[in-house]
Image 1 (cartoon, rainbow, N blue to C red):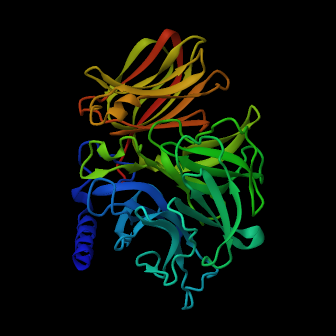
Image 2: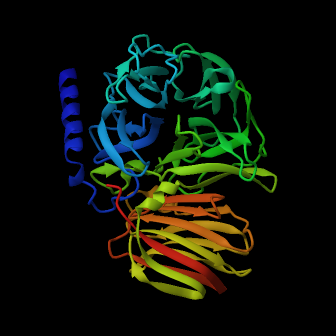
Image 3: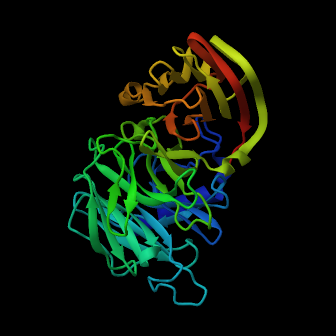
Amino acid sequence: MRSFFVLLLIICTASVNAQPFSFYKEKYRPQFHFTPAIHWMNDPNGLVYHRGEYHLFYQFNPFGNRWGHMSWGHAISKDLVRWQHLPLAIPEEKDTMIFSGTCISDINNTSGFADQPGTLPLVAIYTAHIENVSQSQHLAYSLDDGRTWTKYNKNPILDIGSKEFRDPQVFWYAPQKKWVMSVVLATNKKIRFYSSYNLKQWEQMSEFGPAGDISGIWECPDLFEVPVIGEPGKTKWVLMHSPAPYMQYFIGDFDGTTFRNENPADKIFRPDYGPDYYAAITYRNLPANSSPVSIGWINNWNYANDIPTTPWKSAMSLPRKLAIRKINNEWILLQQPADVVKSLRQKVLLMLKNETIDKTKKLSIKTQQCEIEIVLQPSVVTVSGVRLAAGNGHEIEIGYNAKTQILYIDRSKTSNRSFNENFEKLSHYETKLVLSNKLLRLNIFFDNSIVEVFANNGEAALTAQFFPDEKDNGIELFSINGVTKLASLNIWKMGSAW
């Protein structure tokens, strides 16, 4: 049976990699968001830049389009938007699934795995999951730039005898020349920090939590340093994780041992206020002077297995560059699409300036694959914004209520919502957004079944899936309860990353 399992795995992986362009033409298939050619995908894992390549590992079921048989899928990119699939990296073995984790470029060979001059180890640290038995942290390494992997013969490297201890993220803490690991005690809603000098032996340093959103189990922690906008050379630390099925972050200081939150303890801060953004982590070992970059999973555990896509399921977000700014005495994580995303723009579909919107303004273009930049000046009591996938009584609405200062996304009028009752219920999402200079700036990416919205230079983000009919391809501007000024509108056709 074990031999058959391995043979089937090899056949499936070879088939996907041999014929990547026989896929990516299906209904609902995103064209500039990463998706596996076939089968189920969830959390991004092991994001690392290594020898000129961005590596994306991810939770993957090699045998089907629903969650199960967790292994690490693998893709590489030169630019973070155009991807090449590689064979399965770390497969499930016997009763042990390969859950989420990290990958680091061990440039100083602290692990000792490099035994030849010029060899630079990639080290993956992940959760080995045995259903209803245990979760412990294991290690695998690669000496050929991630193409093949060897599991460490002294695994586990960290085991506390728990069934809910997972998702390690590891980074090099230069001031003390050591590795730091953040890992969750999922049901205790805590993040624990460990240190190591060789990636093999780990010592506990401190804990953080419970704090903020404790409504769901905690998963996928990530601790990283981020520049402060307007203060050259100054940085703060962000602790981000996923209280299922959403995300939250804390911002403060890390002294190599303990993280201390500096934001209000009684307020929840989310990197994304839409329904479909989870398990985001940041890239390790980026080139010098690069902005921190994160990627998240676009789906929601309330309906993830049932979304109506085939032969693949789930997508990754666009790469997001990160910074922070203090606004009203609170540290806010700013997220914007990485600059390279602009390279996918093909042609300008429409440009407008200095117009007014009264009730509804239907645009002349029809598309389900575009980028929109829009600047609005809402009047005091208007509700205004943009509707995508409009037609036949369907639409997804991205709007701003000027009176309540609420930015929202509403997919309750989109088609094909009945595949899961939770999807229909979870239709309206919103966040407070105070305008600067009375202007609302939206950068919107519409990719067939995905919308990512970035507001006011990244102060807020909302991500949502929906599944429009092919004829639902109109775009409308709207203003309710008065007139809204349209300062500018630019719409680009977006090309395929494949």
